[in-house]
Image 1 (cartoon, rainbow, N blue to C red):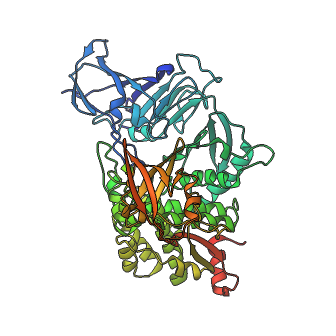
Image 2: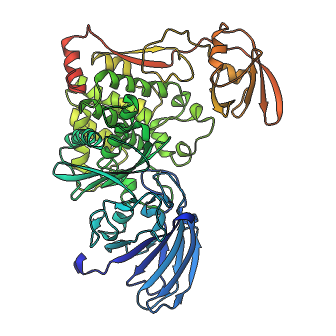
Length: 606
């Protein structure tokens, strides 16, 4: 029987009570299992490796048969129900509370609606092969900001482009990988490789949309050039919700959902926060690269996804770290930032990794495996215990790219193309050693030692040596203050003495967020959660602590008063010389011709 002859699963979504954040969802199963149909809601969403238990947001659930007769539902576990045997179609009706403003779940109010299918759509066990139809209805209550339209990568099946109505998906996996946004959306479009791309924006903003579209288009073309083809066949949708303060994205096969600050958008007339706009473009770049790297080239453990519980792999460093390396690099190769700006951004990444001693305790392979319980559930001790497979993964990718360029005359691009042709295009999962094997195949190098030391081990990759072979010097200096993210040469002010405590400003109170292992703050007995009251006889504030520490030489005993809960504690802090944990990169004018050639091949012509 052809797929066209199979009766589809039919889902219907109504923004039932936007003021109460409730979606109504209806599912019609044409041929339920004769012995009782099981229904499962995913526990996690691909791209965000934490069990989120979306079923806890279901506030009502009921079933009936095709004649409208109620059907008993028995709950088997936290996310699974079994319907009693029913004649004819089985209809499930749920009400889902949607109040998560992130890109991972669902949101509904009178200004906008957004959902991932993993939050709303029950999967009928045994029906994953069936095509799906989705009927989207407008909100039952009036919106407050204008007429709502729809943004989704799903194929219209009667709905007007950007309108409410019927859409279709090839199967359940495609349905839940196609988020839906509904709001008064601003839109701008462009084409890449002959495929229409749309940026749909919700939230209050005043943006130069043609400039945004042109810059994103150029970045997308750079990413397509890495792989040599664009596997999207119908459309690609960027959905961006702008807020006062926020940042994040979640990739999907033919779309992505983003959250970013409205003041990072370019404004009409050419006004732009250059650093903030580069951050925004980097977010677009990162999620677009994922349409190959993790959505189609993905670990064997994710082929297919099991969304009922944790699924472990040591490869997230490659899927997130390599993507994090390419996101900013595409900005410079596409001409959206200059080479100096790229080195500044790269210097910040190196700084962020170097400031965490956890990188000496956990490898990026182990960080990948433990993402579910450690990376996505960080506590105050995280910088001492874990490493980010995003940030250090990006540095491992950088080191691998520079090593391949120097020693084999090849590039990480060639590795990605091999992974695409061998695994991504045919839909085969990448084995745990597949990235190393692909890199060795394209380069002819034995990379066992590289992967043992920097992927499965905890050594820092030799970036200074590899960057020098590309005409770039890696330099270090002390941190200039609490807001110093690195990436730039030292300033004029002396660096404050080092305590090893990260201080957060909580409504004017100086709260200890983290205490680094072996630091003066740890020796003094300070703990995360302590509220600093006074240091050296002066009122402690997060902003003013650096100035206090600049007045005293390293090693001098400073009295500290702090509150731990409701008790006052007194201790003595002896700040140390600030470590050289802040990095910046500089082009080397004296670099030889070979180094300059590699530099141009890496970053493009200056």
